[in-house]
Amino acid sequence: MTTVHEVLEVGSPEMHIAEGYLPWQHAAAWTAAAAPFVAHGVRSLTQAVRADPDAKLLVGAAGAFCFVLSALKIPSVSGSCSHPTGTGLGALLFRPPVMAALGTITLLFQALLLAHGGLTTLGANVFSMAVVGPWVAYGAYRLVRAATASAGEQTSLGAAVFCAAALGSLATYTMTSVQLALAFPDSASGFLGSFTKFAGIFSVTQIPLAVIEGLVTVVLVRLLCRVNPDQLRRLGVLPRRTAEASSADAAVATENKAG
Image (cartoon, rainbow, N blue to C red; front, side):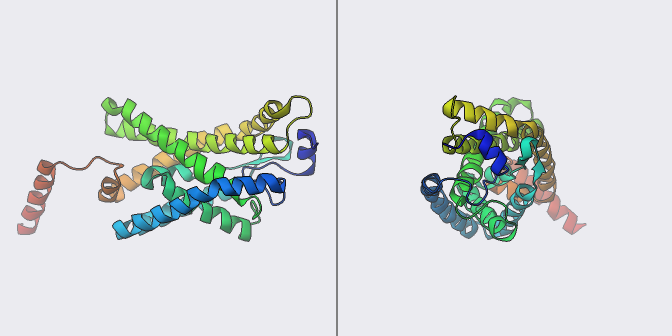
């Protein structure tokens, strides 16, 4: 049986599991597990764009953010690599199912164009980065929003976005460690020992990266709040205006035209 040490010597464990890295049985199983989420995600993405055509630009921005961040390969210990994921932004803007579709497109293009990840391991990478990561991110976002509702809108939104992006990234690397540990259990300590070793390798760079990704995502969301607050209100990220506030804005606009 292949040991963790042999895996480290043969290849570099990455957040994107490389082509041919998993036994075919594991690759097939993870593909089957990810497929329903991807199918639902494609449907959700289509419905979201049809319901709000103005959201196309923001959907593209969320996909581009995920592509750029997850394409970064930062060397870690023992020849491994880590990278941000960028899935938290799309998860909180459009919900996790949409991110499953965008994440799959991202991973497919990276496998084909950048040799980052692989086609045989696409299902495993999709499950960790485009399924588990976004759902954890969205769950963290909703929980923190509810817990900090009395702290003020800016504070609540900032804390929720940070936790969503950071925890979504950490959840992805944790799931990748589970996948690798299942495929390559330690000869002495089994799955748990293998998981501990893989997770320990990733954590050296992934924990700081998760913090940085959280901060970058907060900055980006605050920028979107200034540039396009109406779109974020329609998406439910910002609270909708009350009827009184909308009437006041309309009155101000009328006065400005008259002046």
